[in-house]
Length: 454
Ligand SMILES: NC(=O)C1=CN([C@@H]2O[C@H](COP(=O)(O)OP(=O)(O)OC[C@H]3O[C@@H](n4cnc5c(N)ncnc54)[C@H](OP(=O)(O)O)[C@@H]3O)[C@@H](O)[C@H]2O)C=CC1
Ligand SMILES: N[C@@H](CC=O)C(=O)O
Image (cartoon, rainbow, N blue to C red):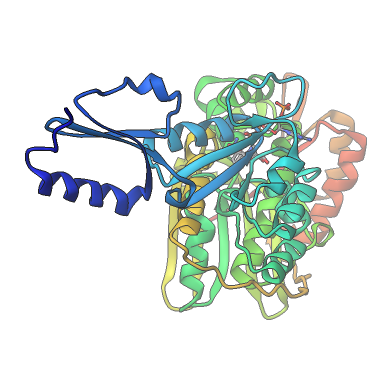
């Protein structure tokens, strides 16, 4: 004979508490005879036991507050999955993981079929973590058209389709969140958005590529070559699928365009500013910097001026004591200058699976909390043509060095490499000369010399 529980009140309280969280459907209700969990063959089962009574709950869809689909199964996506699993949050479910062939379907949620993801009305958010602007843009567009919010870490896609993404989100009344697309785990765009609500941003400056910072730091500290540095950054999950994007400054260009949109509400086009990277940098160049008590960092600069926006990306030689010269490994350092707050610097891991997944998860949880984002109007922008007085370091071959004869202040030779330090001159003229010289020597490396500490 089945007996009722000896004390019904606490048991019912526990059931109600559980129900308020999970809205469970009672799957099996029994006294004394408790089937093993494997009996139900599902991970979405919870057993609530009280004295001699057991109830098995199956979490119904109504109880899961957010169902997501992940696109991609690379460094960031796998870290995201680990972080979601560690949370044991029954309200957040990964309902689909889109992968491409020939990867085998190794997780029950994996699929090759994006149409199935789009057609599932239970999926609220598409979390896009694949490489390259295409087909990511198509996937995100279709997701928003199907009424799903989009979270992405893909800066190639955001920078290429920024305005379209913002407009689509507005049109379909869904959320578009992309905090992970700049500065990895640092809450960079989130901070810009919060600050600018009360205090206009006037300048952004700093280190925003973990791969190249890791390479520079380890060329200095361990004497690695550029190629060895790239290989290590790839192994650590910092580099892009095509690491030339990191090395040649394109990844930084994408991040600058996104930061400009977020900070200044402007649509910065790629042909409006120059981006130089680390191509051609050698161990002899690093030794020449050390001899002058300088360290090289790849800096992004974005400033609002009366003459328009100043935007550039280039290697800069900083005094060894400068704060940005202390930034090691894959760290990023983003400096924000606002009208009344002055300067604020955020330093943290700018690349790698765990920090980037952390930023993606934060965006997902914001959507789950139902916090809203205001649509971002993006206006066309005028670029400042103003010149500055600057000096450059140039590492090149003998023949190409001759092009700099009229502007060279100091010249040395090391193992077949000419190392020259220019006189101070008009930035536009020196930059044009460097671009011309690079057509003769693709292995030429140039860096602006920063006289004061930043
Ligand atoms: N790693 C990092 O530190 C950071 C990365 N990001 C960005 O996040 C995104 C993911 O980066 P990460 O995980 O490192 O990159 P990975 O190269 O490790 O992974 C990319 C994933 O995208 C998949 N993919 C690529 N093209 C397609 C396609 N056409 N259809 C379906 N899947 C595709 C790849 O599949 P396959 O294995 O078959 O090639 C792979 O699973 C990128 O956009 C990157 O720029 C942003 C901030 C930091
Ligand atoms: N390849 C990028 C990854 C993060 O954005 C970097 O190294 O910064």
